[in-house]
Image (cartoon, rainbow, N blue to C red; front, side, top):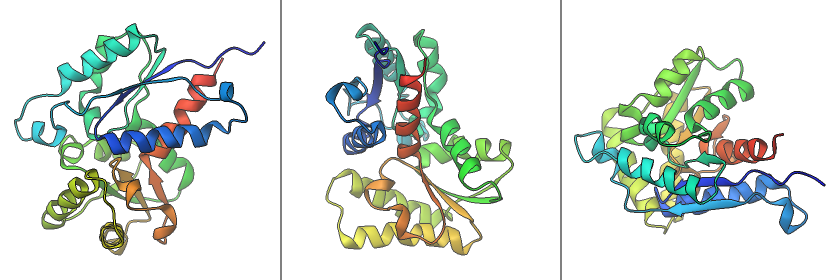
Length: 233
């Protein structure tokens, strides 16, 4: 008999619609033919984690809440943790310190996917929320991988954040999709050879076929990696 896949605990709710999207991507990545081909997920969809972007400006830290979620998931039977929120990875150390099970690091996995998918790209555009950018999560990881990160100008970033919060509202229309595509195209015009969707709300309004360069979605990367690790011997 085959070994059942590891149970994956998901630190979710940041935001809830992005967590739902991650769940769907895990199902798609599982390539299942029967129920028991799927991965068991325990999802803590907690929308009350302190705002990661506000924390970057001196607001309450989400670290204690994230650590508590991690402990709860481990106690519930999770053998592996994942968190479909890029900005919250600024507190990854607190999560890892709270549990004894592995934590799949979304930023590290996404940058590894960038290098694998676009090995010759030296300038990579990063679309990400304020908290993620202020923590320099992608900037540092891309520099270490030998790439130069490009980001939106200050005024454009403010407008982009407004769009992200509208996407969190769940009513994405044609105009919002065009607006999201426009931000990616600005980075391409600035010289980016690939774009990282470094916020889990981005795939709700932008698909890989919407732009002319490779779009590496952090949500998709995490979902695929979770399936591989959950099934690994």
